Image (cartoon, rainbow over the protein chains, first blue to last red):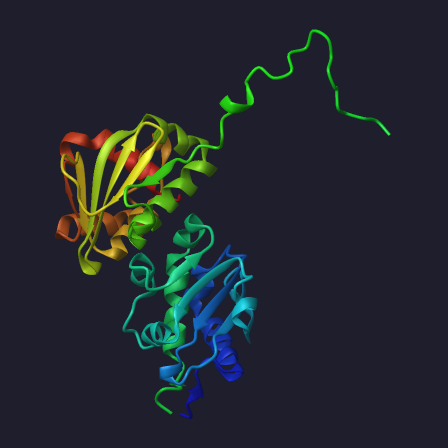
Length: 141
Length: 165
């Protein structure tokens, strides 16, 4: 299966498809009605020189739209999770659990905590969706 | 256009409380280490503060809760002490002495505890999926609560303040 470049528009489209294919997410995300921004901070030494953002319009168990945007645009979402590129790579390779990452400050969350805690299962499944995408990382290309 | 400003009205007190004594919005949660509070301490403090601020029933528990509670999360090697002081919470990095209750578990179970449903009479619900998961963790040693048996009412109060449900 051909690999998709990480944090490319194709990656965003593949993530949307994966989320919408997931019956677990459909159930766990019921009632969710907020946008989520993922800010991927630049790491020039990892061949990721410019910060990027992923803007996710998630609604009631469905991904309505997922697109690549600037980091500042992603920062305008209702919930924003920020981490350097290499941390996101760890998440996508199942080396870092995002919940633990947030507890340890490796991923920084902005947004209403009780809401995100209520949807822990949905966010775990969303992470699982990213791990199902065959990704080519910029520091491995 | 109607001017709603009453101006100086004879016989009406301008302000029963002098400006200097006017109360600022109170901070419910303080961090012993200030800006150096750990991410875990900030997360738990922020979670409890948001829970309490938005829910009067949780605020009532918070306002009467006096207990020092430790939480040790083994798989991420993080711990905090939550010092509930009847309407105030002081969060410290690490486990401080003289704790009434100490919860030792993993990160996933901490999230489960914060998702525990609260049923009639403010009792935690242990028969739904999350509740059964917590009971299973207790029975298998994945969740240990020091001081549980002698402090059940306090533990239930802490659970209500901590749960987002």
